[in-house]
Image 1 (cartoon, rainbow, N blue to C red):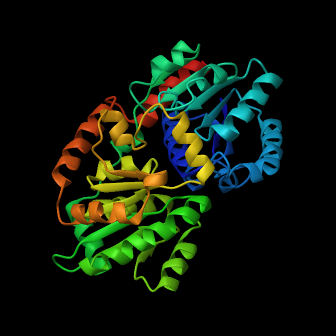
Image 2: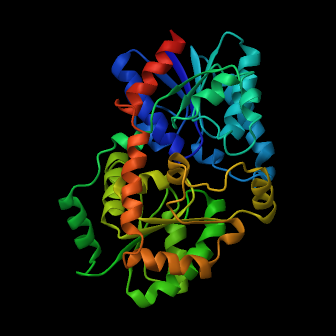
Image 3: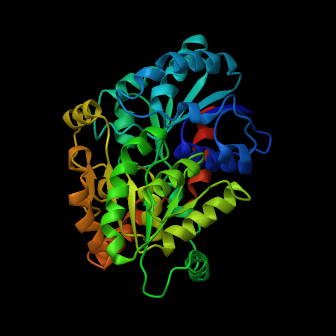
Length: 382
């Protein structure tokens, strides 16, 4: 069986690698091709071109990249020689490929992993994608009805973060000791994003927040995304802020993930850019504050089109606001600092931790996500 997979960013790379492991467990003869990052490469994928070329976000930010992305779409479609196409998130690129591939070969089975958040904004996307997507793998339990109503089949496969092995007490203690965190000192994890456009907007905000929190004597650690460590380290060094930047380029992808989970579990709080990382922090039981900025036009358009008033997955899954978030115009240092300071001294920590346990239960199907998703794919491909 031959499968062509496409992931366009770090979270998709993680999902793709998990799915590949699940598929290999059921079908050792499966052959993979496509586009992915280091995690999918570790499972045997040779990427058609670097996945990082697709890591563009924002309604206005993407415009200047369109000519290059369209060339990559054409190149990708031409490379598809498989029994099924599996696109993972990144709809801007993936849907263009799926649409063109389906037009070229109507018998090609097309599967999209991560249902678009039509319950949050642009509900018409479900009907649009039904023209070229046969099946959807959903991460959230309430998503399948939206997809089925549009004419696609859809399975809730859970979220891989639920089945990830979390850091032990010994690993947490070792991590804090290695960083030189003193007894009673607070450890703060800062996550400014995995894309260059996110760093452009979030680093200045986060740096100002850290200046304000220096009085607490907080130890700051930043687990950088692939290829971002040098830029982040240089930025904070130039400002005279002392932070520890963790480069993901360690012995192996697995070793890097183990270290990141130890970092999350060892931290007293986190300040993170909005995204999938909020669920990783929740799985580790790390209290958090979420922040996000976009261009003025992107922020305006997204807020006008939004059907819900939260972007944090913990809040979305639970249907109530547990994690404080500062998005777009509300992403201000003066608003973030007092809330984050409160978390560092214990205010609101218990409520968040209880909510995290509830969230993980809601995302659990009783079977590892990679296996659940693999079963769903095999039923579709046949």
